[in-house]
Amino acid sequence: MSLEKAVSVTINGVARQLSAPANETLLDCLRRHGHFEVKSGCEKGDCGACAVQIDGEPVDSCLTLTWMVEGRSVTTLEGLNDADSPHPLIAAFLEQGAVQCGYCTPGIMIAAEAMLRETPDPTDEDIAIALSGNLCRCTGYTKIFTAVKQAAEVLRAGDGND
Amino acid sequence: MLREFELDLPNDLQETLACLPGGTPLAGGTNLLVDLRARRESAERLVWLGNIDAFRKISIEDGRVNIGGGTTVGDILRHSDMPTAAPSLDACARVFGGQMVRNRATIAGNVCSGSPAADMVPPLLSLDAELCLASAAGMRSIPLDEFYSGFKKNKRNRDELITGLSWAAPGPNTANRFYKLARRKGDAITVVGVAVTVTRDGDKCSDARIALGAVGPTVFRAKEAEAMLNGETPTTELIDTAAQKAMDQSSPIDDLRASGDYRRQMVQVLTRRLLTEAWQALGEKESGR
Image (cartoon, rainbow over all chains, first blue to last red; front, side, top):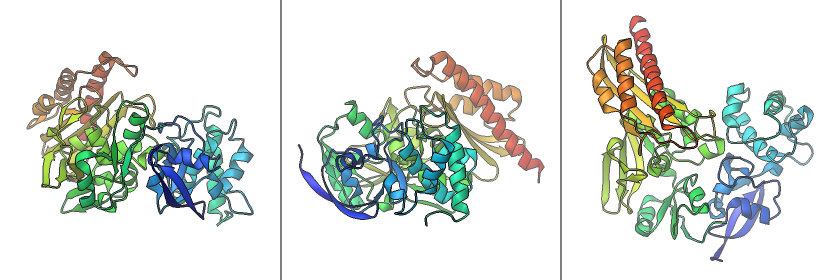
């Protein structure tokens, strides 16, 4: 094992020190530290199951090395909720039945949340572009699109958790 | 699991260049980390460029677009001036990978990977972009058109870094288009990529550039086809002939995504379509005056 280094990083608002070797991906490191909401899928940037936000920007944690997040802020699905209520995306996915096996869902929410911050009233094309790096093999995407639009509406109406 | 390597995290250009002779530049990692994991590549020492904000910027001054090598595809997609400063590149960013890959993949990384299917390259060639390379010895620039020397081979020396690219923003008499043919609009490897630039002077085409991706060992310009258009009126017949010539200049392989024959035919179809669209767009502007 190569030399480990302590990486200072904020995860979902909490300051942490993660010890990791140079060749460990953020995906492996997060799961080693109990963040099982970050899923391991293709491990080559195709499926988006491992998506997290770094300083608010969605990236694939399988293509990020832990050392790269020194001093940065990482948000996983768990970080989208506040203490009292689920994020409107989560509520909408439940209500619309936009989840079957659920493996792709955390990554889709991470990607969709970033898009909704920039594009509060997305068209189908906006959603397609934002979710083009997230593969779902169960739902066929229709309900996912419906759920994202529903969440957008809730967020626009100011019923979000901000 | 990735094999062991050393990882440098430089904070500025000078530190980066000092690491380079023995290190491999790691930009977004969307190619390199995948290839390392699959054991298609090996590296003892990686130099991560993502901490250097100066590499990640877009500026447009006096009609010239300057873009840092570390600018991501996502940055291009989100930049409000790109649809006019580089219409083909903007169109390309919309169909490039997925959101998470776009937020990591950099323009210099895509250019340097040298894959014939690297999607940013046909638009950049159609814009006649120039590369700026830095090393401890100094800076040099080289036209992108002269950068590739073979399949995944380029003229970057090991101690050099692509710090940026630049091109002239298309003027009102120039149209610039890109189309990516692939199985899906996102998250797909290109079957054929075509970018064209057409400049109109009265009823003549004063300058044409046609760049073709995924139909040869490198992305390349179909210069014989371009020459047929320069100084001529691009009639339907002439555009047909030029598109045919672009097809003749292609040498695609058969692979799991498409046959070589299909790719060749699509070069003709897409070149004809984009040239026609570009010329018509300029015509509408002309008559709208």
